[in-house]
Image (cartoon, rainbow, N blue to C red):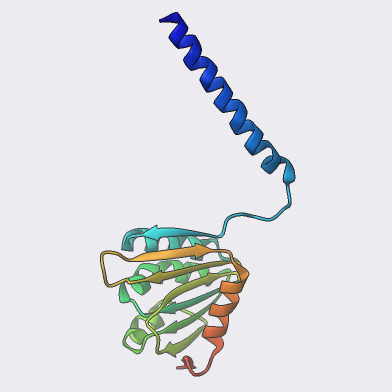
Length: 163
């Protein structure tokens, strides 16, 4: 029994040594480049809560493209609060116009796409998909290329027009 325990212990020590050999160069490299690319949130409640969190953290500007009534209603209170410290720009589906006016955005546009997007301070993006199904999900990222793409989408007059 003692021999088995010592063999098992020796094997585990060797594995830890191997793992250290693999991880040490990664830790020492310190390139300043973040490996984080994106996170995924699943479920309507989780998506809405993550969007509320991001809106609440905004200090400069919030761009919101919404076609889902539940998201807009869920964010309305946070958008009113955020307006005290950040500029709120909103593009919504035509059927949501009435609700949008109650959330107090600085600028409201109408959009023709089925999309739900939050951009916070040009450094965080959440894009939600399949909000009408039980398999809805959102991608949360700080990728500047994706953020620029959605900002251009908001600014594109063939997609979003002033109300």
